[in-house]
Image 1 (tube, one colour):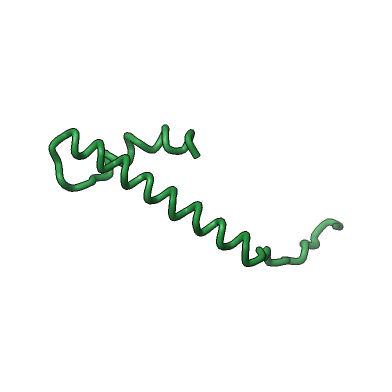
Image 2 (cartoon, rainbow, N blue to C red):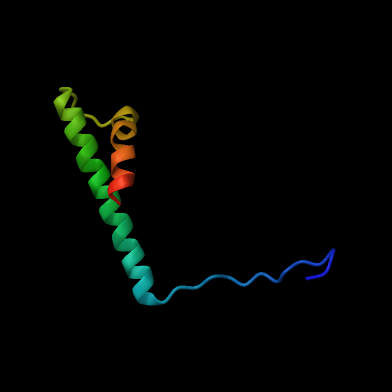
Length: 65
């Protein structure tokens, strides 16, 4: 690519199976985050999950995934 020129944009695509797998991984990730945050909230005697609960579980959750 010469100076002053730009590369053409080629949109990325994924096949149907890769898309299904990505969606399932995201669904499981969010469900696990909610479960872990709920456990922390319950231990504190709170019935509502707050951002601080998610902040507390996030580092380990990311390591686990």
